[in-house]
Length: 277
Ligand SMILES: [Mg+2]
Image (cartoon, rainbow, N blue to C red; front, side):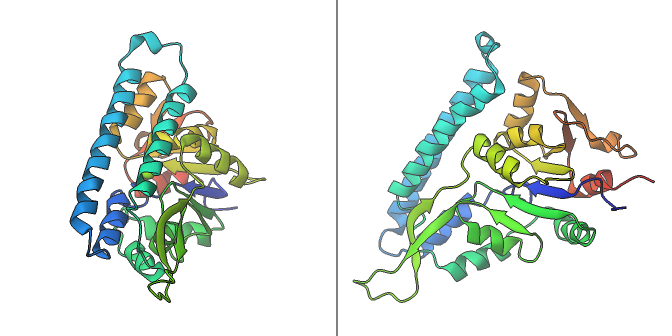
């Protein structure tokens, strides 16, 4: 019998596996490659981040503090964010914030990303025990994520930067054009991919840290929230989603679809997911 109560783990990347969000990392690396308009690009980026943050906060406050919206569902709430995410990606492409990155540079950036404590040894042990591990991420660069989890998982699904060579400049090595081939943007995309990728025969866990992970989490046999993302916690409270702190239930084998299991660390989660004898 397997050491773990699950056959498959599908996991978010940014702030679930990584300590911090990696979006800034991508934009700053791209800006480094662009001498002629670096300052201008970074100023424009700062404005874009401010625009996004204002819109995001507005949606959160409108929905979570407004008592008139009681009859609306979590699905409607998450749809409002989907519209913002699509508008935001359009701005990122128009601003060419991700232009000029090389494959090798992205992979190296990925390798340097600080991961949450225990991730590497836990993934290695899980895979030895025949648990399949897949990453499902709304990150803009699949190569960056692959660099971060090289040899630690079975599959990565994310968005992809588009690459090309500038013939006029006689470039030989392809560089990112600033366009993104989109695959995973919203909570609904994550749910769709989760359904396609979950184990056909056994138990599947989904772990994430933010509201874009909530639908996949609720669909999983074991749905886990990691960390203290304030919007995620407020959303769970607002929509009265049953939640259990796993630190208090380490001796139990809980597979309760629709209940969110909350953890602060991968180490606690690993103990929880092990079969009790
Ligand atoms: Mg995340």
